[in-house]
Length: 426
Ligand SMILES: Cc1cc2nc3c(=O)[nH]c(=O)nc-3n(C[C@H](O)[C@H](O)[C@H](O)COP(=O)(O)OP(=O)(O)OC[C@H]3O[C@@H](n4cnc5c(N)ncnc54)[C@H](O)[C@@H]3O)c2cc1C
Image (tube, rainbow, N blue to C red; front, top):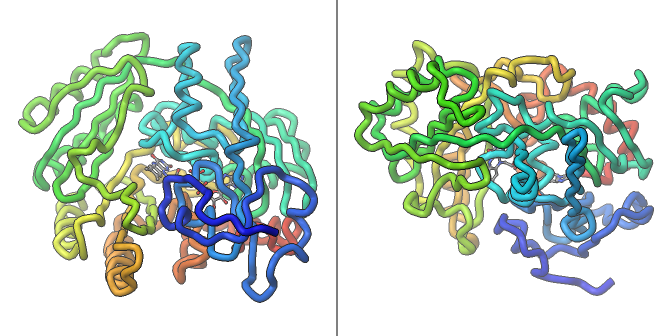
């Protein structure tokens, strides 16, 4: 087979630079034949949807790029369910829905693909509408043993129940999902209070946010400086009394300004002024996402810890950020899933980055990421497995902290439905 190098135009630079073995665009039987993978390298199939993670392409591995042949979006205007291909990116999804005055709780970036949905999907709208997985109505795809599956939320027989639950949060380990049916929501205007704050102000704002109603959420990023977004969905164009009261409390912070957006798709989080290096072609990076509950009385100690972490940052491209969940994400009325840490109300992530060929800087940046994780564990003990890290030493620990009491069920599913480990290993 002819080797194709550097033809994977994707946002994640580690994966973009990978000297992969082959690019495949369609699912066929040959994908599920272990003889087609190198035994020596313990090769598995990499899957690319949005291409925003460091695991969708690897040196010497094949990548199934779903973007070309699994990119359809169809909204059924009678029941407002949207069907998307497994290679659809979230920006295309909400831009399409917006034409019909509908929306979906996507995350803080329009770049991620179906991986966003399948790994949980934490949105600034999640407090009001649940995680992305809570809005899955149906899926089609293939298990790691090549079997085609088609499941609908209200028609799951007991035999398929575990597969359905595991698809919601752990799909990449045992399946390739080619189609997802999703509930959509009414598109509403959004008010965003945003701007730079200092550490004391961040502390006050976190305290306020832990009392926010479900239509308001806080997201902050601590890079060179601290930038925050308070995101408020105005249902039916109305700023209700409670929303008004909470947003008024923010008027005393001089660095914050109010912006009004007609809909979610108009918003771009983390603007250029933040000088983030996320998409810098000269840098490689890894991200680890944590989960924890309200900080309450621990806010002052947390702020102290955050300051120490930021003081020890190895370079300007590393940062820590956080988004707020809670509200509807705490409820299980959407059915059980493999996103097990339902009590969580905060999802911070640690972003470590380095000049791509500088192994020494990489080691320093990764050590900083792991040390920061250790320091933040007391506040955020669990993991949101939004990025697969089977190439890192922390993988097995992350799995245990992400899937908790369901890890053995996941291993059983993997043994049954991906017995040759064609898909990313557990
Ligand atoms: C700028 C930015 C902002 C983000 N903001 C948020 C946020 O607000 N909330 C949040 O929850 N997360 C957020 N994320 C994390 C992101 O949602 C996850 O990392 C997600 O897994 C990325 O999915 P992808 O399809 O873009 O990536 P890819 O690298 O293409 O895929 C990620 C993993 O998912 C698997 N995968 C992808 N598609 C399929 C499929 N169809 N079937 C089976 N396996 C599949 C792949 O094997 C791969 O290992 C953000 C990431 C970035 C880069």
